Image 1 (cartoon, helix red, strand yellow):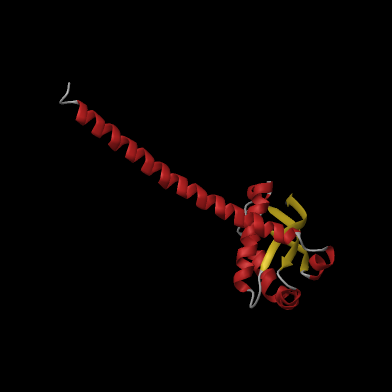
Image 2 (cartoon, helix red, strand yellow):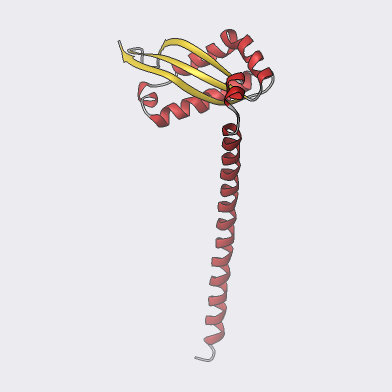
Length: 156
């Protein structure tokens, strides 16, 4: 028994060290996720801190969009509101809205299924996708938020 005791203690210490190492690695990953989530929360709070006049000055509407979805037996009538990071970006956005932004919206809707936009999660994903695509197309500034202001989905 005396010969086994050092081996048992060594195995116990090795297992303890492995568990501690795994805990630190996984614990570090969670703190990074928490920091990223906190950063997103701060961004959302910054958007909410704007006054009503600032929101109006930095927002642009796109109304009257009617198109087929990926399933040609469904059409959608949808309106969007785009909140931009500054009034200058809004002015540039309004200049290119019909020639650059509207085609992006139409192509995105054309590749969207009726099932995906019939849920709140699907609409949120559509807003995020549009935000990312439009930000790539903007010459300056960025879209902070995309909102669906009117939505009608109908089968033909």
